[in-house]
Image (tube, rainbow, N blue to C red; front, side, top):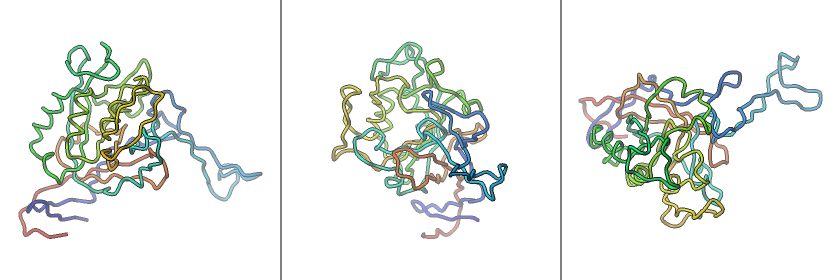
Length: 289
């Protein structure tokens, strides 16, 4: 199926049969990506009395019971409910699951190689994604992010090996994260969805401050981890963050149609499946949709 759309008087063709899946699937019987030492995601047959939901155990059908921590097991999408003392669910927040997205690629540097800062103070072995590298990558992408039509930014971090899909991120295997200046820059962009192949926007062990999450949703920073954040009138509650994606190296930087698929589960974070569709500018009479 081919979709024709018009954006700013330019017609585009989208092949809906060419979806590029940038999620990390959760396979219960194989190695899994993991963050913060959370338990593995598991699938076990439902047991009710003498009934065991497994055809291998003589049942007429399979009925599995799943256990998962969305923030730590596989690709997931978050809303601002992650950091505020209010009930806010992803499926209640996400109202544009189909939008244009820009993919860029960056190479993080050691903290002492960048003048950018972090809250709490960065450490020498931290890997930082700085404001300057984001500016450079977006400049190379052209002016697409200045257009109101591009609503999502996808950031691929180098090195980009297949091992990302099974990393166990821990104290001894920490991921890169954004500097305060980098996140402030991203927050000023007119985008709604931020997708990253990292387990978090913030350093894993950051004294519970989640400074970059607060910046992204424009929610006042807490003084310490013991204080609860509250969304004010300036909070950007329509925004989402999708973490632990994996963008294969065969997918080149550029503009795509993004379909951000999430289940209707009442939670501040849910497993998600972002799909990218290549788009192609065409010369034809525009069709208004």
